[in-house]
Image (tube, rainbow, N blue to C red):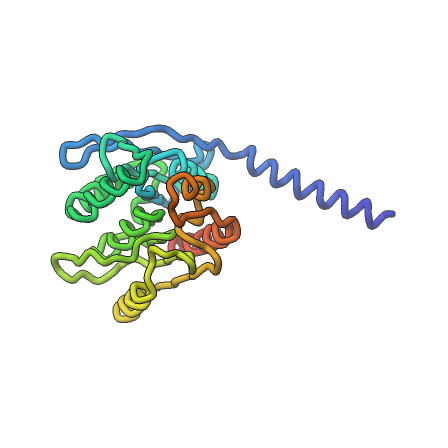
Length: 268
């Protein structure tokens, strides 16, 4: 009986500590605006208002739908981990797509006119660095689907980031005007059953990273398809007859790996 009582007290104590840690946080999220190329970009900034001092910053690049509730929640999740996160706007004026046809047009515009995409990304990076809660020397970027392709190509463009992480993102290469060494560490989280990602693209990516001696890891999640991190993906797939679906196991595993990745790169 004594042993059971002790165990109960220990568990209760751990729960109290966990609850106190959560209570000690005050996660604030607010809409923000900055400009790129004369266009207003509408982002979402999230951070723990109770934390003291400067902390690493993380840019979060949205799926092809635009800067919506999903990517804002990811920014808040990063804030709970102790980072200041900016869910940036790649489309301008906070444009959001509700249909795959519009989303495809928005995303295609950006990738075909990559200098504009880079200008918008760099404007968001500059804005994040200026935030009073951010250590400007410790910045990373993560992205989902379209956003995964964006952060991967920003690394290829030699943008000065500690690291980038792509979740079910495009692997297509946007060639730099001038070959530039990749400065960022790179993580790519992919659904093994994602029909949008071809085996030859994966092999080409691995060869590219090996040739540049990048701190790189590629993870394939068995049974996962495109958009596996988005809880709404399964319903979206049904509605628009698209091969996308949420996979709770792959989502949890990839987020855990990313957390370790951020700890490692920001410790250097």
